[in-house]
Length: 391
Image 1 (spheres, rainbow, N blue to C red):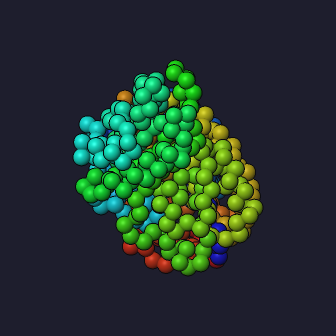
Image 2 (tube, rainbow, N blue to C red):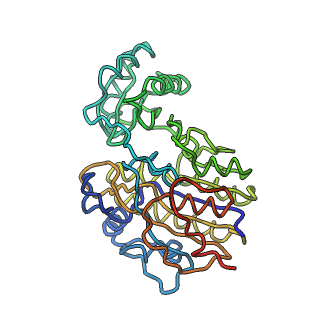
Image 3 (cartoon, rainbow, N blue to C red):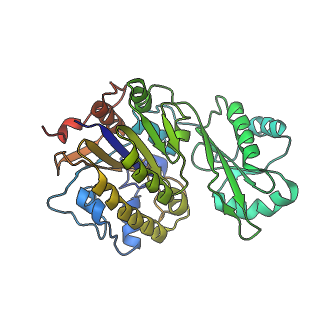
């Protein structure tokens, strides 16, 4: 009997181009394989032991003959390749209509009401890397007090401001105003507050980032578990991605290290339910910045922390490791990539070495967790629980 599930999303860790990758401009992408190649091989002994080498060919990662875990990969059924879409599908909610994106920046019908709401004109209003646009416009922002608005290939409306000029509480108020204004047909997936500090030439984004998401359009895994009396502990940006819906307790953590600190703390303090965590560094710090070597170091650092989690899991626990999309740092752009995501499962009392195959939707994972914890049936997905539950 499974009483507790640890679901860890390795943000941006794709494992090869999806069948429709070319439609997204992502033919040939393979985040993990290309990172491994750039690094001259990866040392990931714990992920290797769970069967990662059976998911694909990744330099340095052996295909062990008798893996401890069950393994496979999943394709995304939703339209899009953004973080919100991926996480919602993992929780059983497929997004059939893509969120709007703004490759030319936001139109006046969005920007003008926002400027009126905050009482200031904005800077930027174009797709950009967050660190690059802050470096380019940060000094003008300090001089004028005008916030920096930008987007990306994702459906996001991002607002950056120096904490000395705009306190984070005020920046969050501005983002809530934007969230209210961004109604259909401009209903972007997320409004993101991006506070930063420092001086020209040395600006640094803080961990005060906050996402203002939409509510999922239908019932998710989190809703079902909460309704059935199971606690749902959200670590990292999970709470924000679901707009708090279905979350019993939110633990905000700004990087992989603090996320794993909270996961290990939950290992000792949360006796049942779902512990749902997002590890953001792969995507935000390395994928979007085309830093393959930094990405490799982050994977190896995570693998080291994973050892403590594996050692601490109890009978009745289920660990699931996956991702929400790819973010191949070796591609010319800095955006997410449309890829398969890994699927690794392990528990002290679970059958080992089962090939879970290629799942047609991330929602299979959500359905499996719901079955494991007695949450009920989701609208999407087929459970693979029977494949590795013994006895």
